[in-house]
Image (cartoon, rainbow, N blue to C red; front, side, top):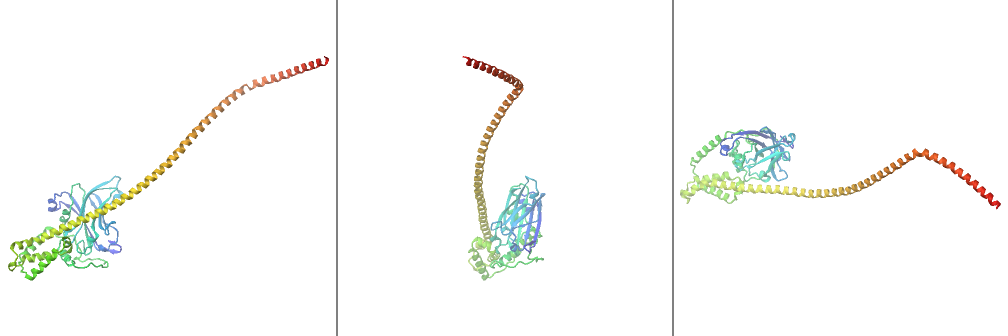
Length: 434
């Protein structure tokens, strides 16, 4: 993988865990879980905002992992499970998955950071994930999350609807690449007092086998058998330790007890601390004031201290998870506040548009009334004209009669005038004789 010009070796492995051994049986696990192992070297040198894995298939559906090395707007390593082909799926699609992620502590697998959830994936939410690990903890050289600057990420996907199928216990115990190794313990002890240095990224073409974690390992049962036998052999070797060695071992234990449980868990000092308890337990205490009961109690203290530090680390982890949730809550609250402000703005704009529409409605009503008045006037004009035209047509039909009557009238008028003139003349003639 070429990331920002840096050749980054990526180891990618997909397994289908079907009836995955005694661990799953003890937890009542049936069915199949797909496990994806993603190991990325030169992790601290990656500057890309996000990395996308290859696609992998679970029960016929394509999925993809997406990680944000510097966080997705938060100071956490973020990991998401993504529906790889969501853009090509039909409208209304859904997929259910029970999934879990782990950032492996390569010093002690049981201290790995894990989270699991069950979600319904759809077009609105095609990806789900977590702010899994604070970046300060990820880059802490006293932890095993970036051993030799290689980050080991595991994802577990199950598409059945079984309740609580994937858990922290399942992830840390159901694994063929268990890395609670002597190499990791020794490296952790060696770097316990070192300072973190920044080095220039180096192109890794053929990495040394001692620096790369190969995914193909012997069976877990074979390793457990070997180390159980080795522990028994060493415990029966009856090595005699000096009083000075016993005092030195006791000083180491006192130094550890003066630390807080969380600091002890982060310090990488359990490897020498375990040896100190072995020295005290094997020391010939005949010349000391230690009783047999005290000697026997020493044998169980190492495991007890480890249990306490693990509980303390888990408590801090839970607190950090709360901090992450609080950050998410703040982000969601800010989003709600922004949405509320925009809602009020939109509400005001809607009222303004309603006012414009109301004014337009009044104008429309007024125009409608004017139109109706004009239509009534037009109809009146039409009716009046129609009546006049009918009378005109009737008059036209009688016009010839009126013309003949008028001519008769003219003749009669002339006759009357003539007769009237004769009468006037007659009277005038009489006036002259009288």
